Length: 348
Image (tube, rainbow, N blue to C red):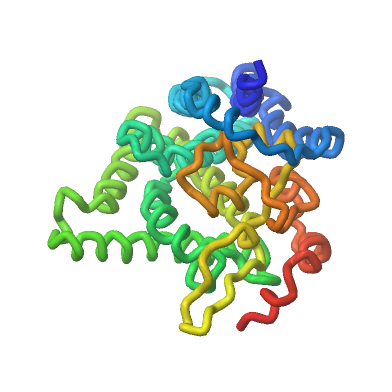
């Protein structure tokens, strides 16, 4: 039964469905649940630093339930997305209800869409990667697969990484720099991959070009079928989805930098180059994303067997709570700056 604890990750889609179905003030149930109720629960529930034994790891890797809990997000995300667009374009609703519905679906796209896509994007199975890319589509962030896997994991915790927030950089500044730098980086990586394989820009292997076509086609279909309101719903909920991702990126590596060796190269990525959180509610709802240090230490590890490392910098709160704090830069800096290792702050 303990393996089914990750069903709690679907509590956010359930909250979104309630808001979409009943409307009224309940359209804001999802943001309230995600950023007020969950943070409060994180203060109540204890921190869990327990790591699995080798036998338990082997057992959990054999159980397909952990994979199917990820796959289930595909119909859930798309079902809620199109239900939301249908309700917004076929019901008589107030402007505030439309705004609440868009925010709710945007949160679902970020948590159950991009977050799950991140996990599946690291898998070797082609079908799993396909599901991951499909979950990135509604947020217009398919390039994340290229930049994250071939860029971020190579450059994490260095100034060269768009997804590593600088010391004293606000989340709002980071949104701007990360979004545009990651997209530019994804194209550079794609062009390099094509060149290494002697392929031209219009090659069938140009994934970035396909992503552009898929994403434009998706929005045009929404516009054609559901009209301007549907298009607005799809576009803005997608933006909310990828801004949630960027907020998570912000807290994952904030202020952490790798030192350079005598040869001038950066030291390898270690457990100390990502912020770790063992707050149990955030761990479950985000499929163990909060054990990010171990993920970077070995990116091929599946979410259900990620470990906690004592040498990893520890967040005082869970990721959901930290996302709220990040929205208040002075408070965030006051809490987090003193936790950044001094030798990293001095790096120029």
